Length: 621
Ligand code: GLC
Image 1 (cartoon, rainbow, N blue to C red):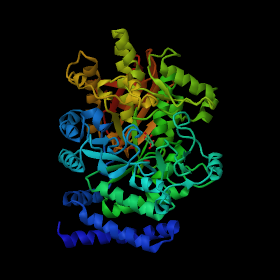
Image 2 (tube, rainbow, N blue to C red; image 1 turned 90 degrees about the vertical axis):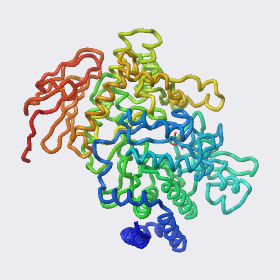
Image 3 (cartoon, helix red, strand yellow; image 1 turned 135 degrees about the vertical axis):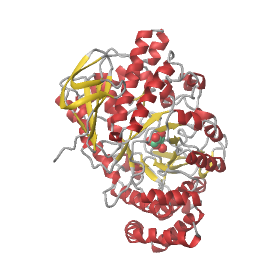
Image 4 (cartoon, protein in one colour; image 1 turned 90 degrees about the horizontal axis):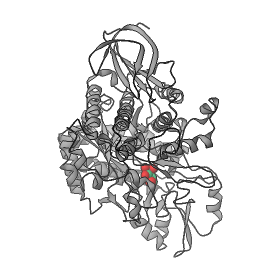
């Protein structure tokens, strides 16, 4: 691309967003010179952007729905666990292709103090890769190799806080007012105590409270997460501008998807919960415009671990969008509730809510990720079924620890709060499905059932609208890793139970159908192929649930352009029948190719079926 023409592109993009961006910026900061500085830096980052990335930007701009098709499959992993370092990841791209993955989320890899890292979410330098993982150049090489294979790269942008070792924090700690003003400092406990009256705690057990006393400088600093993660004060335009420069710098390394960490927390106001405040939306909207001006090929993925009514506003509106994608977190938690209760009612309601949202919205669907499962369910709805929040959470935690309700799951509690009685849960998909227990007990029948549950859950997850994300190791059924208990830097944080290193020896068995890995991998592979082949899996297809008359069976239908597929999932370990009557034509079992009717369908324990209507039908509305 010629320089003049790319310069024009920048001006056109800036022109499109300038007035709204300026308006929002002035509303928040009322500082026109800082706004001018932002614009001039955006231009510099645009100019510094690689030509190949600029071309990709233009292609994606011309096809804004590029990520809403049925070809996307993600996988998330820690670089060291997966392949040692960034170059190691580059050498494993063939494996990722075998997994049919075309989107990788590299878990936090920026500089972070060893032992005070929160799994990398305490960043001490936004422009430096952790030495043990490699360099920025390695990252650029990796993104370039990924792009050659059509693989998108996602990274975390941890903007709510920095590590206490970040240069700003060090200067602040020396009493430099300019840097202290980038965080929340208080010389006595008066204001911190006032905040504590309304702000909930993120880590009530592992890091209680929202402030940390720094005896060396006689001040409190706000630390919503761990004491070494200092919250940034976005009321200061310097913080916003500098963090946007970091964002653009990282974007220019060839990143395709920015996962904005802990979004709801980034704006604080006294006497509020300091969550989801309107200014957060202003900031995310500005970020969207900034990225559309400088690097429109990038997608913003918001990490909003909240109940649905608080999650959805982060998409913004169709005219003024914020995040491109959000995690389908309530559906994930409700899925595990369904596993523990064998009762699909709440899940059906939850899917109906998600399915009724505008089709522009793209959710990331997942079974497990690097974090714990918080039991954020719709307890009002559960009440109608006679379930009460506290006792039900207790049941779920007991169940998944393997203590109650005919459970084969294994795992551990996380942040059990003795005061509220609340606790979250940690474990891998495989362990939660019973693979760990069956392996330990060398029980082949139990193993087959556990694999069946694991595959069924993935099949159901693939039926949801959006992009499915696999948690690395799940494709080979990796179980909990208890070695974190021996590492004093990790022992207190049970999330490390599901952050074990990839077992490449086990991964070597994926083509052997007699092994657990082979059984799991090959069945998932088949489903992934189907998902990429059938148009009805695009994220904007019509999706709806069908009543099955059987409390343990969920049925999801997807339809587009006269095509229709249905997925039927048995969440119980018994034979069950889905009492459905889809009489709109003959259906074909998509896996076996056999024709069958979509009425009164029997399913074995944890069985599932993908059915496709044989003929196209264009319903007239
Ligand atoms: C996000 C991350 C989590 C981390 C927290 C603080 O929620 O997923 O792992 O502890 O942010 O940065």
